[in-house]
Image 1 (cartoon, helix red, strand yellow):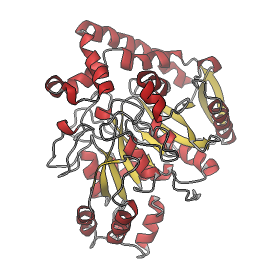
Image 2 (cartoon, one colour):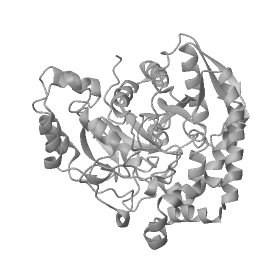
Image 3 (cartoon, one colour):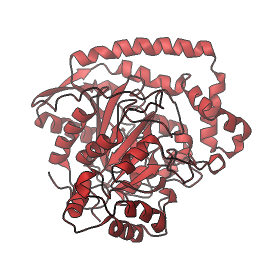
Image 4 (cartoon, helix red, strand yellow):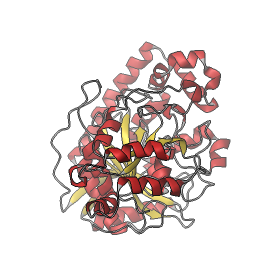
Length: 457
């Protein structure tokens, strides 16, 4: 099935498809097998039909996501369905859905299931799960990217029109790059985190995976909203103007780019830079070191203690239930003192000031989303180094209060996708998605891994 939102919406408005028909076909297409370890809990046909039947007497024109199927990372609550955060011993069953999930359901969207993740959203690889390593949608030998692994692969594989992930250190962008998707890491607080099992509560974002930038923008419009119950929720500022005919973008100096011995991705990144120039962009070299210094704070500094604080009682009572690499990372938090935390906060403030100056010269910054991709076996053999390499271009974003969009821009010779990330200060989300749409209109070939053609709109 072509699950692009505009395509489904056209069928609904024409009376050629009903939500009940869609979920029946989707249930049959997905089937009972899960060879890529995408799902932790997929809703049954009867469970999906409850949501479809609620739409039976409603007008598709009145609901922007009428009958649109979506997947939910299993650290985000869906009423009546267990939330595991990738750990069965931690599981609980919420009585109500997360604020953002309810926003989407109210807009007409239909949940398909809860997806696999790096346990407690700690990782960028998609292998740190007792439910099995989630496999790449193009090649099962390769990682899906994490921590929002199943969320990305479900969309790329044609099982959902869009999905919710989370993004603290890159979890809403790396899986997008590895599965030929658009990944929106929204401005912090733009999407409520009520009903989310936190990783680092001060930095967490609920993210969106979509087949196209236009779909991501449609979902964002319904998902966002100020939540009085979420202390970190922020009211959206007025949307910035659409992309200018000419714009400037910053690129790290050549010696600050890292591709980790990958022979193809440097050329693919240069191809993407050329695509941006063809759209009217002018490139400027920037000093990327302050951004890299900020990124190092996330795992080398006391922010890892936030991960410990989020599950401290469970960790101390059930340490053996936690995935070994995850236990090692979160357990390392105890070495940090309160004084260490304040010193790191002072350093972050200095880095924020140092990085802020770049926006006087450029509209966006452009980097690879990830410098390379690894096979599952490679990650299992060296989990910390591989994960660290994947975070090279991602870990600074939330510490610096940036919005970002991962955009697919090409393919390696082995058929695996490659993409870039564009970022800008908070509340640039729609402007970044506009840029992503223009890139896709010029470079898009297929929707995720479905082999269905990307259609220009």
